[in-house]
Image (cartoon, rainbow, N blue to C red; front, side):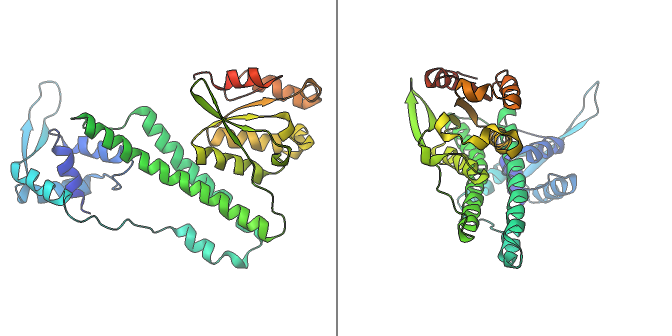
Length: 306
């Protein structure tokens, strides 16, 4: 697809300067061009030549003059023609898949390291999309339907990245199982309370004993699109309370990376142990993960509005 049509689309809603268009394209989650001046002004020259747009220099008293571009009726007709044309097959190039294809020469630990690095790259993209969503991306907003479509388009990118994370988890599980170290996927129950949902990890056979268990739990959050988790004490092994194992640290880091809010029900016996007690004291000051003495209090806090 040519950037020309993206520009015609932007101009269909309002007249813009080249700088305006550059900023919108750079900030967009789905307009994949760099938005540099060369691309935009080269396209504008072509559009002017084809009489799809016009330009007008506007003089300003206290600021430099600016050139405004406006779409013509011919430009609108061309844009509509292109919108109705057959869609191009999505690009599916992914360098990591090629790297993974020839990774059998590596040790399993090395492949898992590759997955960790790739996961961090995907998480960076997710945080970028979430930041764009929080900031509020450009949208013409000429009608409720158009606003809805733009919101769904923006959600498409986030959905693709989330699916990629789920696939990474599947590869990890396959590699672990292949080496005889497989673990059962964690079992969660979707709980509904006052119209809100959270996941509860309760059964003893779904203990969070390994990093993969934690990743499986994150995968369950993605599957159900629920990012609030209640951890029953029975789901936390003895190793969780020993900070030297790194299990608690991994859980907290993954929850933070994936923006999962967690509440754990921990008895007074475990909560009062050494360095773990100090960790709980710090956690209970925050709004991302806290511990409670019973499920009722944990669920109530978990479902509080941010």
